[in-house]
Length: 205
Ligand SMILES: Nc1nc2c(ncn2[C@@H]2O[C@H](COP(=O)(O)OP(=O)(O)OP(=O)(O)O)[C@@H](O)[C@H]2O)c(=O)[nH]1
Ligand SMILES: [Mg+2]
Image (cartoon, rainbow, N blue to C red; front, side):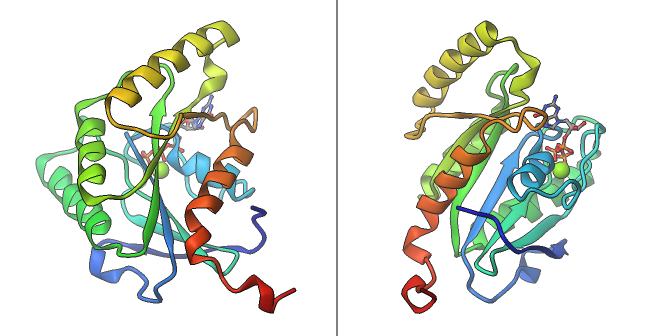
């Protein structure tokens, strides 16, 4: 898939505010600071469309990016940020949980994991929730430039085993923003999951 037109559409603080135009959606989820917003910028080939920060807990709202006038890529606030207070944590649960439950056109969730870390409790909870809801997810191992080739190969095998055990059917994709690694593979996966929602291409050709 080529990413042609790309635009920021809106940020929402409540699930009820999500676009109601019925376009398919692909969400980017994972721990705080894992690289969700950075991945969106690389996928969409824009330097700073999604705001990133070295400070965890940066994205606080659900941000909608419209791609090719066809589908929404959504940037979710991360979980597992220890410093937030109980009230903020509850608001996160309500927004992200509500978004995932109410996004009826959600075709795929890109679930990001730092390749150097392990699977956390919140990751498992989300995986179980997605399985129960029947929403497909693709594991993405982020910041792969932080490991040398041999260590990355070991980490990848470790993640493959952990993710298989957690019920993932798709092999993880290694991703790196500075190396531009994984972009094409991820765009292909997105395209496949959007296939049944494809616009009528025959009319355009
Ligand atoms: N080395 C390296 N750093 C990365 C990569 N991806 C993201 N980062 C850095 O990781 C930090 C967090 O990136 P974000 O994209 O803001 O992370 P996020 O998951 O959106 O974080 P929240 O919005 O807080 O949930 C930033 O300092 C990024 O520059 C990568 O592939 N390699
Ligand atoms: Mg972010």
